[in-house]
Picture 1 (cartoon, rainbow, N blue to C red):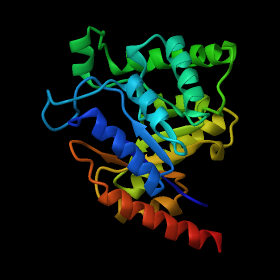
Picture 2: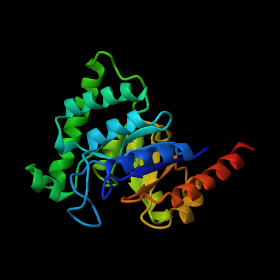
Picture 3: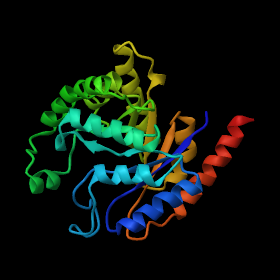
Picture 4: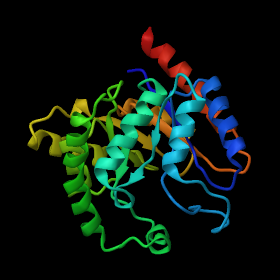
Length: 261
């Protein structure tokens, strides 16, 4: 099966102009998907370093590229009205010409909540809110005129076995998680598959989009053999070193050429 490469250009520790040039460079190199994220402060490095908001970053990403699919890994359900977030994605989808992925998750970064006045609550609270809001997002998308141009798949991020993966089975076309161990990934994938079967859904209708915290290239063959549809790699500012992106894209091209024979 052909495999894709996604690149998350993290909107931290960089000037916006540098980030824009990086999106364009990543697309020119041949990345299949380009992602931002949805936080208000850097996740690592200088805690109060440069940082940019997710919705505007996604809109600029869509306007600055032409071919790659675009989205966020992932938008936090807590930060915006769910129906507004649906309309935002529909509008950016038109801006992009139909390339948007609707990435969504329950939220986890407590500083974002505290600094901006959102109620952090508990993880079960946030997951219940996501389960409540996903149908509202879908309902609003069905009511908007005009509708999205592209298929605009829902991508849910997270790997909680009882709730998050059940929500993926119920609502999403794509699932994003991190895996630094192939056996751990296979276990999560089987849990998701079982949730799909209980929902009367073919597990193959959910694409697995997997990143790693370690040596992505070392795991790439194993992830591809396990059926992953897209491997993601993250880049942080200020300079956004593209070396590992080039290596992963070269691996992708070799793998896909072999698969096509």
